[in-house]
Image (tube, rainbow, N blue to C red):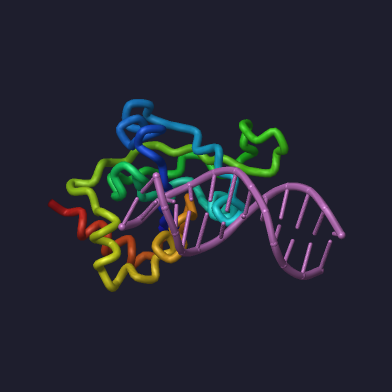
Length: 136
DNA sequence: GCCAACGTTGGC
DNA sequence: GCCAACGTTGGC
């Protein structure tokens, strides 16, 4: 059983529907060291909550890691890494940031504690809580 | 549109 | 090596 993560994307830039359409995508462009460390800790098969930031502010789907960290071709300095993601399934019901903040079990979530972090770990209990909230 | 949080840069 | 200034992200 792998670890769980959460990645953020502005839906206007790359939405979960885009990932579904593409079937697979390169998750590059991360330029934050803490986020990069999380990318490096991902293993193939790890499941990832796909969160829409700004316009949406909700977890909308689940993705999976298809390729572990490798040098990010979009980083000229060669310091950062990318992973590949594939879509797993959309959530039956999006879980909004508002809902997450109102849920005591999620108060310790990394993405809530540090709202600007674009890649963050999700603990097993947090994962289970969010999936339950996503049931229709 | 504003602002808080945080990372990065550059002067000293 | 410190810290002020600045830029970016993302919630509100």
